[in-house]
Length: 220
Image (cartoon, rainbow, N blue to C red):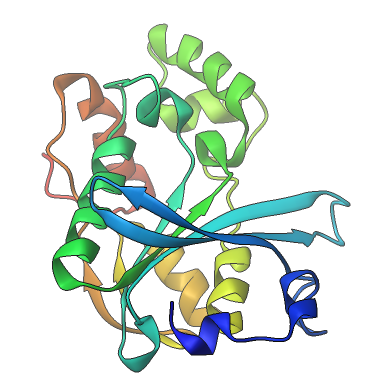
């Protein structure tokens, strides 16, 4: 692991410096994957507005601090990544990003616990049921009383600042992630598409992303 990230006083494994959104480094380990052996760091912070604890994982390959590294900010999708759901492209995007990082030899994935665009797993299942009745993903969220996208990417920004990253090549189709990083002081030197081949089941989901949320997608 890069010394800039790993060689810190022992207390830094528990509480990071003031002004970093109460960011806490919970644990660091090594994670062998089908794409390579990543450094894995768990982060938490207390959200002073909600009173809740937010969590994220940082997967890091190689030394990301001597360049503008590849970065994927990825939101948890249990149905796609664990159960193999074809209703979305989440698993394909994660694998595409990790493969690209492995090919390059360095890069970052920040994996955030924001299931269902931040509404949570059970609400996501209720939204799926409404989609089965003909609503699109945005209409289903709004019918349940949620915004189209409830995610907040400020935790990812705080993690990047903590490890000394201020320039990235962002692997994303989502303009909201681009905006969050830019507003947080992270320079995006290149925007790279992260578009996995879609299944027929995912086409309505992707079309809604493109037409109603402005995602940069090639799907018709």
